[in-house]
Image 1 (cartoon, rainbow, N blue to C red):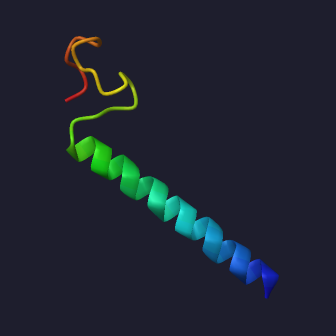
Image 2 (image 1 turned 180 degrees about the vertical axis):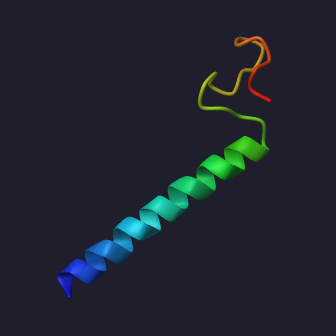
Image 3 (image 1 turned 90 degrees about the vertical axis):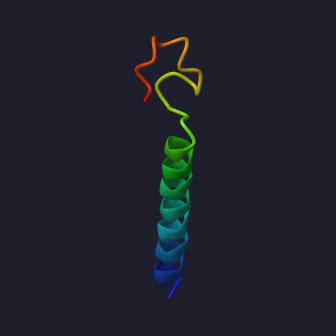
Length: 45
């Protein structure tokens, strides 16, 4: 039973992380250049 609860918590954390990455990507932010596309020559978009 403990394994199932732990698995649900881990899956929930992964889903939240992916959702955050997708939301940041839609808002024009990027992991590669910290959300400031002028610093990376505009390769973020």
